[in-house]
Every structure is written in C-alpha cells, then in structure tokens.
Length: 421
Ligand code: CMC
Image 1 (cartoon, rainbow, N blue to C red):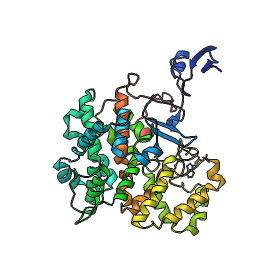
Image 2: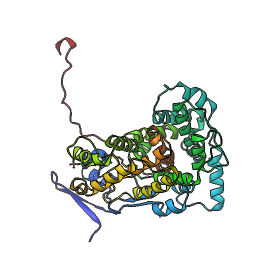
Image 3: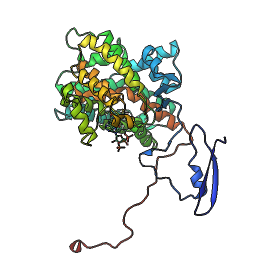
Image 4: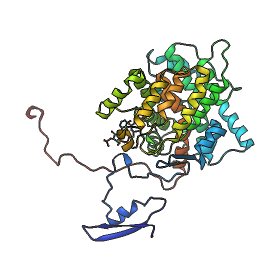
C-alpha cells in the first residue's frame, strides 16, 4: 500500500500526491494545488503544528511516554528533576549531569525581595493565587534583562533554570499572601518537592512527610508535559514571536488557568462538594446528560480509552490518604466514576476520568485550598512549556505563528453617520 495521499482540486482538475509519514501529510500539498487554498480546522482538530521529539501520546491506547520512557516507569522510579532534565535534553542524566542539574536548580530558588515585598503586596487581599502566579511569572522576567536574548543558548539555559527553580517559590508566595502568613525561604538541603512543601507549610517544628514528598514528586512527574495541549500551544505561539520565556510562560499559564484545561481539578472538587453524597450521584449524572453542565475531570481531546495519568494518580491517592486520612469526597468520586463508566452517554462518547479527576482529592487531603490546585499543575508544567519553547527556537521549520481565517463577515459597505444608525 503506498504511503501517500493524492488530492484533486475538482475546480481545476489539478492533482497533487504527497507522502504520509507517521500519519501526517504536509499541508504544502494544498499550497501546491492553489496557494490561496486553506484548510478550515477550528481548534486544530486535524492539524499538527510542529514535529516534536519530547512526548509521545497515543490516545487510542492510553500511552504516554516522555523521551520514549513510559510514564508508568518514570512515576515509579524517577524524580521530577530527572524527568525535567529528560524533557529538556532528550535523555535521562547520568550521575554527574544529575548532580550538576540538581545543584543548578536548587541554587536558583530565591526570588528578588521586591517580588515579595512590593509586587505581591500590591494584590487585593483575596486575589486568586493562579492570577497572582500568572502575573508573577511575567513580572519575574523584568528582573533579568538577558531573558530577551532568546537566540543565545547560554541565556536560554539560565532562564530555563530560573523559571523551573523559582516556580515553587512563587507558588508558595502566592499562597502565603492569600492567607496572610509569613513567607518561608527556600531550603537548599531539601528535594524539589520537599522544598515546595516546606515553603508552603513550615511553621514551628514542621517536617515534610516522606510519603507526601514522594506523592508530590509523582504528581509533578505526571504533569510535567503533555505535548501540544492548550497551554503548551500558547507557549509556542507566544514564543514564536521571540518574546522572552517569562512572558511566554505567563501566557501558557493563563491558558492553563481555564476550567477546561488546568482549572478542571479545582472544578472537580467544587463539583464533588456540590454533589455531597453518593445518593445524589444519579441525579447529578442526569443533569449532565441533559446538558446542564459537564462532568468535570472526565473526557479528553486525545485520550479515548483511558488516561494513564489518572490510573497512577488514583493509586497515589490511596498512599496519601494513609497519611492524611481519607478525603470524604473519595466515596462520591468513586461512585461517580463507577456510574459514569456504566452509562451509555459517557461510554459512547469515550469519556473516561482524566488527570484532574483524582488529583484535586489528593491536594485537598494534603491541605491545599482549591484555589491553589491549578498552581500545583503549573509548577511542574513549567518544564514542559520550556522544553517546547527550546525545541521551537531550534527548529528551522518554525516561523512566527500566524494562522489564516475564513472571513465570514459583511461585504464592503459605506460608513453610516452616527445620527443615521
Ligand atoms: N461531561 C459531559 N459531556 C462531555 C464531557 C464531560 N466532561 N466532555 C465531553 N462531553 C461530551 C460533549 O458534550 C460532546 O457531546 P456531543 O457529541 O453530544 O455534543 C462530546 O462529549 C465530545 O465533547 P467535545 O467537547 O467535542 O470534546 P473536546 O475534545 O472538545 O473536549 C474536554 C475535551 C477535555 C475539554 C472535555 O472533555 C471537557 O470539557 N471535560 C471536562 C473538563 C476537564 O476535565 N478538563 C481537563 C482535561 S485533562 C487536563 C488537561 O490536559 O487540561
């Protein structure tokens, strides 16, 4: 069977044949037929905007791999910083590389005092931490003039380290501000996850529980990258204009903030709280089926079988609950999952629990307020955004993002004076 596709323009009878590689054919075929011909593809349902070697996702079979390594193996054996190195460099680090990388990240965790004392203090007392996080990431770039030199690999490297290192510090700052507690400084002796938990919770003789530290690290690994999702696409689109990585990452974080993307974990816990008891599950599912709302934490643009991250998160939830006690909303979530997976509405549409269905329950059990949930997604996704940003800048095929539109508005008409409208 030839691995080609032939397209005929029936208006002209012109035909073009182009190769299909990895299930993809080049859109240059359309330009060859007629340079004014465009493909109408709202939400990029059938468009591959880039070649990428960072993350492999097979939605039909529930497969997710970073640099070829299955997510299950990484979640079991690796650490977030090792995974971050893998995403940025294409391979796992050896011992020397890991030591150097860990040292570099650990020694860039502090933020300028003006960020805390002046910038954060300017927010309203009840500002949403994710809104603060988005703004703080953009503001951080103004402290590093070199961040604009996106063509300089040395500058790119240092900004990448800074953004990964400082994201947990900024996240903890946003939380501490929202509850009016004093900030904790980063601690160089702790792991990436433990340092974050310590900045969040240290009061008096608090010590990070190793099970919760590992759970946090596993959650960070699972959220580190997910190829061309909405936030990462935003990062690439903004980065394609050669904006600095802080501004680009702030745009990516804004995309993540939405309830259909990284904001879903917050929406799941709100939904479970509203359902309240397993007795109310059937009525809730009926309301979803009647179009009165969505079952948050269910469904995915790409996964149509199961989300492998959801499976690992569910296992992690049980480990966390052994330390924190069971989240009372777990029973509602389990009943909801069971009922939805037996209901033709969800089965026919291939709707399964996604990464956000159980993660919120873990975060809540660990003491995080719901308003911090999307921030907890943004901290580890920072490396995914940066890996794609770096790949984009090194890709000679990429140019500034500039899709075309299908104009659907009025034809030319004459201006009408205000008095006559
Ligand atoms: N609850 C009820 N119905 C749903 C849901 C849901 N969660 N998701 C999709 N559907 C229905 C939808 O109404 C449509 O039905 P019909 O064909 O009758 O019109 C059909 O399933 C296809 O949905 P779609 O909106 O065309 O699918 P999409 O690929 O555009 O949307 C999604 C994907 C994730 C935005 C969507 O499934 C959703 O809104 N889920 C809830 C929000 C959520 O959990 N988001 C987190 C995604 S995972 C984390 C991340 O990567 O951001």
